[in-house]
Each structure stands twice: as C-alpha cells, then as structure tokens.
Image 1 (tube, one colour):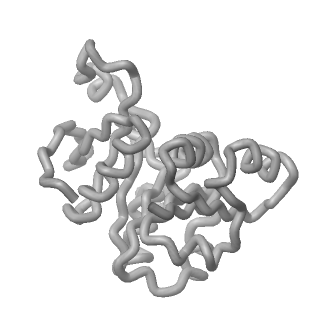
Image 2 (cartoon, rainbow, N blue to C red):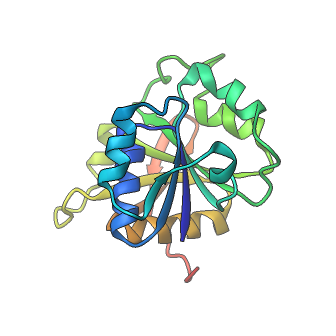
Length: 188
C-alpha cells in the first residue's frame, strides 16, 4: 500500500518507520526539508522517500501533522480530496478543551469543516485516564486510538494500523465524553 505523510512529527515518523518495515511505500512531504529530516528518512530504508506535496496528495491514505495555526492555510491549498482518507494526528483527549483550539473547535473539527469531501479519521496519541483504564492487562502498549464518521474509511485505517503491529481501537466522542469501543468490522 502507498501511504502519504504530510508534516513531520514524532508520531508521523513512527508511523512511517513502522509502515516501511511492514512493506508499505511511504511518501513524506514536509514544509522544511532540512538535513535532520533527510537523514531520518534515509535511515528508514528504500520504502520511505521525501516527496513533493502533490505526489503525497495522490495517495489514498494521507497522514497529516500540521501546527494548529497552519491548518487553515494548508487546507485551502489542497486539491479536491474526494475519496481520500485523511488521518489527522494533532488530536488529544484530555477531558478539557484542547489548548490552542480556535473558537472552541479542535484542529480535527476545523479540518473536517474545511474538507467535507474527504473521510477524516482522527488519531489520538494522548489519551485521558478514562480511556487508559480500559486497557486490557494482556496488551503490550501498542494501541492506537482513532475515531471518524465514515465506516469504510475506518475499516481501511484499522487494517492499515494492524499491519503496523498496532491494536487499533475505535472510539466515539459525544457530548464532551469519550466512550471507547472496539467495533468488529468485516474484512476490508
């Protein structure tokens, strides 16, 4: 599978590294193509390359990391995203309004409002205590939490995360309360 990554963070680089080891082709685009990023990408092997934003946007699944203040400008520059799955990594579940939110909206909500034609999947890397307590004692700490509205997109994302050796846990957020659940999806 070909995966696009827009923006470099600890999370996106970990996903890129895991994806390359799993045999996926990973295209990374970052606004600042500095030597540190070039060195990190070169150490990941032949399955990971730095690419133009246009090339990354041709992939079906795109993983995004962008500073909150850059999101609106970045989204306005994107082409038609119909049929694309955008995994947004800037999300957190802390039981409070996300610091830095604009007009009470999270960055994921902003992206969803700016790209209604894309399937937006929110990936969470910071989880509050109520979710952490749901962890099965037999798990080894390789869980990834995600949410979204498009069931077919969530099936594909779940399948992708599982190829990375991650237990993908679908969560639902409603009324500022977080409820974790694992849906049993049919095969992709």
